[in-house]
Figure 1 (tube, rainbow, N blue to C red):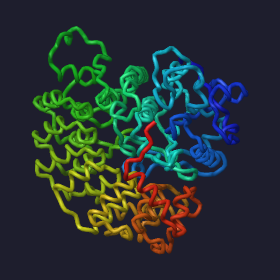
Figure 2 (cartoon, rainbow, N blue to C red; figure 1 turned 45 degrees about the horizontal axis):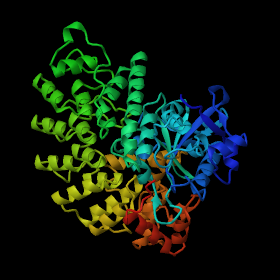
Figure 3 (cartoon, one colour; figure 1 turned 180 degrees about the horizontal axis):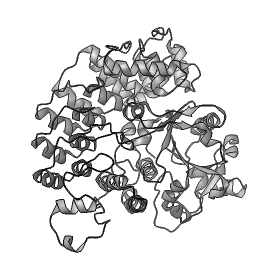
Length: 589
């Protein structure tokens, strides 16, 4: 740690009415250097709403304060995201009691890092400097700060920028290079869970990679290009520390996972992966056999080995994405249709995941070509290769699969098609590619619009695209068959809800029959999507089979003003928000 970790006690954060620079709070004695003996620390990752100040109107602060009050005073849990709850049954919710066991201290960039010293940039703009300033030292210490924090909050409510010309959203948070960096560092920490705050009342634990599929740090958006290059060594150091920790704790499955995820971590950073974590034994020195080196570095003795996580070398090679390694493994007898024996909680991959599924999920399309050429099956798993390409917005992967003869209408075990996948995850490029290979009935597209609002894909652009494909914004969803796999999940989760176990998934299943996309958007705090639906003429008078209206779903929610007005019959501000989103008016700081 190159600069002390200044934090603000939670009780002072709750009393704040204006966010002042670090130096001002320090002079008032309102920030303290955090030590583990003091309690637990919270790292807050967020976007800046203007070039000069992160939150001039304190809109994000108000959401953060509401979320903290809920965690400190409500009973129950912070629920898992519904995707992880479906695909990884062993994943766990976060009890709110963990936030009350010790005093909380909040790390927030503008409050915790120097802001007033002379320098070329500032934390909202050029964040990585070479000037030796305290700010530059604090920025380089961010991985250490995140490592010391017991909790990581992604603060990403839907808000208009200070000047009213841009929009802050969950999607724009996910695109920001710095926010991606903070998230990846968290996922490389000893405690890799994090909490997404969409509103003061809507919090969820992001339990796996599949729940929040996003791009690499190097492919993120930076206001100054040099920041992308300067972040590379910081990320590399974090990966090395994680790999060393996994080896020292003998968590070899996690070591293999992170070793082979380097191609995803470092994509766009012009940086070679670490390939020699385990020193070569004498017989391997100078060897040009890529398969032998791969097996050695991954701790496998043979091509057909299976580790305790239920993965084979070919699964890890697919995660790595090196087509030469995959080709070599296949030539030595690796089975391209070998499926994982159990779910992988950290990645969110269900049981029976194939190497082809993994290659497409992580956009390793050269690797996918090798596996397709080796006659990898398109069926037989919990999900499908096409769905994996869809959720990661892998348009090229969809093109490969369709050229190889896959049925673009194929559904997985839970009746999820590729169209549902692209809608749920907001995969706009994948949607465009998929539309070239098949036409969908209006009912199917309308159901996809519903799932866009259930998942994280509820953007104004997704609404516009699906409406162009003849989706009905007032579609009322019904489960096709109670005897289907998805119908059984709905029935089981509905029973869970009736028994008092309220989660995002159980609440959704209880209310799903007759639910409209707008109702789903309100339930899941997809506020941009809700605004776009109201702007597109979504009705407010419809009721689901539980006799709930849109206003019932809004009750008790912390809604932005534009939605409150929209639900009262005034769509003007919702139209403005949708227009900002469609004009790509996202804030770039």
